[in-house]
Image 1 (cartoon, one colour):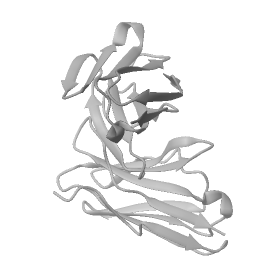
Image 2 (cartoon, one colour; image 1 turned 90 degrees about the horizontal axis):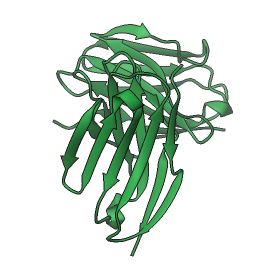
Image 3 (cartoon, rainbow over the protein chains, first blue to last red; image 1 turned 90 degrees about the vertical axis):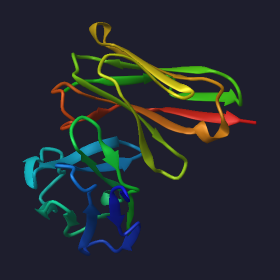
Image 4 (cartoon, rainbow over the protein chains, first blue to last red; image 1 turned 180 degrees about the vertical axis):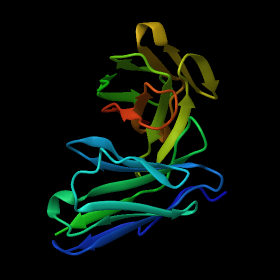
Length: 111
Length: 110
């Protein structure tokens, strides 16, 4: 398997623009996670899905963030409107049970 | 929520040396994982080890759940071991809400 796939790998945008990050989990994994990593706050769980259903979104920072998983092989994390403080590396991970497998991340810079 | 502390925060080793990284957690856990984040940012799962001892090549890990700590041993370190090592825990037993520690940054020099 190719592992967890994320796109784009890098994104530079201006404040106020909409940003969409994409993730393809490992086939057969029934859980999917979105994380954000910053120097100040480390790795934080934003939201996770089980069998395509959002289970816990308590980590989503505010209403500007939204995530969807329309099917078992695709998820998006959207930020609208983006702000400079959203600059971070966003990771997607998937899991068949106890162990999580991370994608390469999307490095987002909001100017 | 659960607190995860890792020590030391930074570690510099010469190639060939051994090291022990520690993870303390504040509450009972049913899921504990060790990850390595390489210098390119990729997070690699090393061990799923809620209790007991596991070994994989030059790496081994031990979790003493009753005393709320886990240790990661790196033997005969290589420059490719450089990066940040994270411990992550979840009280629920699944991988549903991992809380990550702040990491140990390891640099292995020639």
